[in-house]
Image (cartoon, rainbow, N blue to C red; front, side):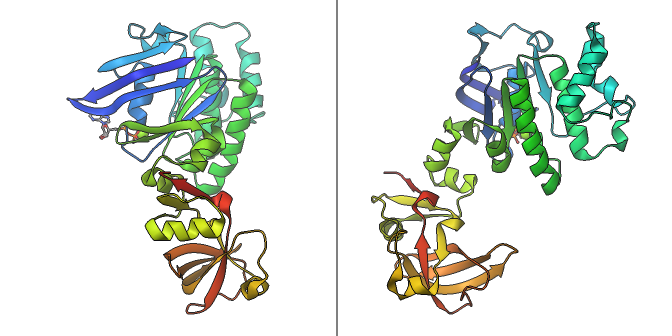
Amino acid sequence: MLTLDHLTVAYDGTDAVRDASLVVPDGSVVAVLGPSGCGKSTLLRAVAGLEPPTSGTISWDGADLAGVPTHRRRFAMMFQDGQLFGHLTVARNVGYALRLRRTPDAAARVADLLGLVGLDGYADRLPGTLSGGERQRVALARSLAADPRLLLLDEPLSALDAGMRERLAGDLDRILRAAGTTTLVVTHDQEEAFALADRLVVMRDGVIVQQGAIADVWAAPADAATALFLGYARVLDGAAAATVLRAAGLPASSSVAVRRSALTVAEPSVTDGGASGVGAGLVGVVRSTRATPDQVRLVVDVDGVGEVDAVATPGAPTAPGERVALAVEPARLAPIGG
Ligand code: ADP
Ligand code: MG
């Protein structure tokens, strides 16, 4: 188990990571999520032994790693762009650490790893002939080859285009579970974090602002900035929050974070008073609409609330200027601040 205890890392007297404490239990995948520049890579590099802590400790199974150099930690680190050796075949890239250690049965181990990452038959290819997603899978196999006790991933999917990112997120999740490798991943992409991790650590300006099981953090963001970073569309305060929470049948709270999908333009029968199940609903005037293949996205000026985001099924009466009723889905709201 990895433990960071009050870790601070500074560059030239300025803290890039301040007073960070977290654990990565054996066999789990923990994601540190935060905007660019918040200190994620610095935290990861400190764990790898590439940046010295200013204060605090990094330990493995209770043993302080302060005096342990990078190559003795038995951690593997994988970067955004994989960093393969361009002149070596896929098999030689994956087997690099095994050859350094003169591991017996290296060829069989490489074949196993290529199978694990779904690249059977790629052994003799050169990195330049692979897609971005294939290159990242080779990089992952290479990281796993050394049988690390901890895998450190720095934005492993961020260099890929959207479709590839989604597919590889699923693959990576499956591979990490199959390998059972304890993993600390850092990313600015909340979807990447959600696809991979058991636990989420939210970081901002060098400080951990919240951590917990993914569903718990999702359901109860610590503050408005965290909610917006997690992908909530808006955070409402005061009377607006009270109105939305009442419509959802939830207890009062000083603020509420609202996902776009929390508010749905109701069917006409609902508008006519036939609503049942999803709370009392809200009424407002459509300000703007934007069609996507699956749904219409709207901004609605709701009575007693102001402008909110909402969705409608294609074909619903949703022209700007129209009055519509909105159904509220309580599970897609997150009260903040009690
Ligand atoms: P993230 O990975 O979340 O984008 P980083 O850990 O790379 O953030 O950077 C955190 C802060 O530390 C930033 O303000 C960055 O400019 C600064 N920083 C990162 N690396 C160095 C360095 N080698 N020297 C000085 N400042 C650095
Ligand atoms: Mg970074």
